[in-house]
Image (tube, rainbow, N blue to C red):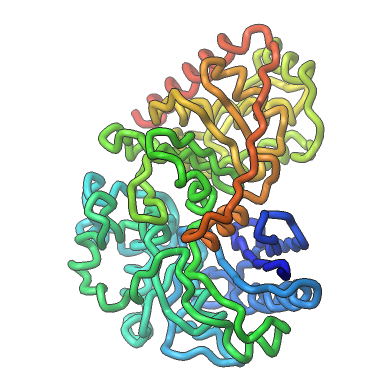
Length: 470
């Protein structure tokens, strides 16, 4: 039987990656580009036309080498498209540009919006900086551009916008709607009271499961890319939830805590207690692809790691030895949050590097491991943990986390393509063909004074945060 190849596009905030995998998860081809934004016009927005041109070229290259039968799109959660009713070869179908969530202009109408948004106990969506609450973005667009907002036929989450561009079928999907948007009520598994108050319900395209086949690629797409006319397009998924989906074959209380890493680091605890989530520490409930809530804690880990390296003049991808880590601990050098500009458990605190590290990369690794360790404690996680995404390939960081949590089994995925592997799981959702990669145990390393270093780091973070809030 001919090999069935599947194409997956992971459209992140920092990078965009297209991968082709066979049914067993073997990588056939992979291409990456930097994500693009455009600061022209009324507000900063994602450069959809440039992204589409690159995606088209990447799909064309893939189709020239492999008979692609299915496509699945995964994206970050804080974006949505207001679309007109039709796609065509010339246009992108947008009624308004897709707002860049790092722009803080969406807070213009906060006095009104904050009276409308649901209580945390309903949405489990904390009030976030810039445009990270999708509802806030959409409200700003509706107030600033009422005519264009009203004329749009549908609101589509970001992943489903790209699926629509490919196959012409408009849909929404629950893992995207439930990603700190203010638009979803996780316990009720339906739209939140915000949607009712704003009478937006009819604006949202019909909800479809992430694994559902929406349709075949449009004829213009097939012509431009060389994809077969019967190549099928799945609904698509929120990126962290794609990583989480691979473990959903296990009983809920047997699933590991999944630490999905990239621009954002999101710790996802299926059995976590929602009542213990602290909205002031960037804790929230996402929902999985079936609509069940997941207790989460997050920080902008990839961005912060890179920022620490930039400040200290080192490369994020370099090697970090045990000696380098021990030197930072011995010298009592600390990286104190927040290096993201408002996110994470210490969001809004002034970032600070205390001391002069002999290795900037070692300090960045210690910072990221300490933050993940803290997030796991905040979630009450005591069982197994799986590290997925870009940090899973950082052996020093994974070893540090294992050393910080000696009573937990810490493992990592063998590759950094966890989102694509999660999409592969969705493509096999109703079959028994999916074979998940084995995880690799993270071995502890011996570091003198690590526990005391962690305690001092936490003490400093807590004290400085209390001083900041005061």
